[in-house]
Length: 459
Image 1 (tube, one colour):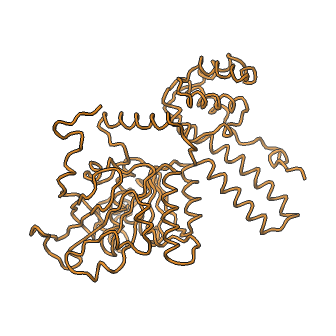
Image 2 (cartoon, rainbow, N blue to C red):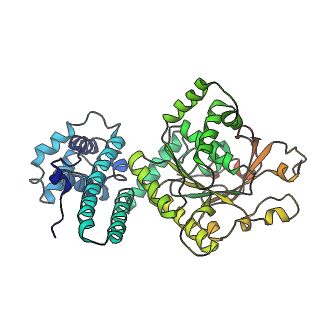
């Protein structure tokens, strides 16, 4: 049976952005760094105009070969491929560079092109589904359609395999940021964490673990608040707390008031509206579904449409993978979150519960990695494991040095693949305000990098 074309049947033109396609291709030939941005978003199939798909494919080949991208190299590559005539000859290549107003918005323009491509694919798939509903088993049709729609999201949010040259460019760009005094990763609200880790790194799974009442959620919301104020795109998968509760914390942090004042006391409505106006300007989303496949799909869709800088999960053990036992379920969730961090190329920061063994043992009750609940897979998958710890919660009023622990919280590092492990970050803790502020660090080796040590030479 011939597959229908819903757009032709309805008399509509397919979703397209040909002028944006021209601008992006032109920018790629004028701005040498543009390819590293566009390559992570678009494939040749993303372009509506066939000539543009051919040109973009040639540009990608030039990039893979490690050669510069400009009018001459693109023209020569198309001539070698015997496709120069197909795209409108050298004149059209030159014409594209005149279509560029500015390369500053190339990422935004690329996302618009991607959205048009996804719209065309969605129309195609749902058009087929409409016709199959009349003749095929409805449950099979639904399963096939949902799978195909998920495939659109997945295929358009993966960056694909990279060449050695791509990795070298990433390292070079990272070094350029360091030379400019900018940390290579996503900045934490904790200066010490930025110093010892370089911030939250793309493709890493960061575990923030602790018993109830230790400040895990407060730590997460302080991180989110900091990232939003830096105009980053942030998603929270809240598997425990209602989304409204998390929004209340953000509003309280912005207004520097208590969460209780937001939720249970009278406050000037114009003040509340000012905080709401602040949050509306941010790229921020809370999802509450616990199913792992939905978490994955929502994350990919948000990245494809809005961009994504950091992903939070609260908390890991509540994710539902469909596995039979708690051990198998947590293992599946942990592995999937690690995989998502690599595919989406963002840090995934997951909160995690600890088992009760912390409560039963004596001493200072500092948590250790064996306290991670349900699965040793978490320890294996995680790139970073930090514990939230409040000795005051256990009636411990002084630390080992005799310092007061009153209103103190500590973030204790147990694992760090790329960075300085074993650090302890001391924070002032205000449960009423849900606010944490760093006040100190205890680990000597975290105070200077290897490259700063006396007598060390590096290139």
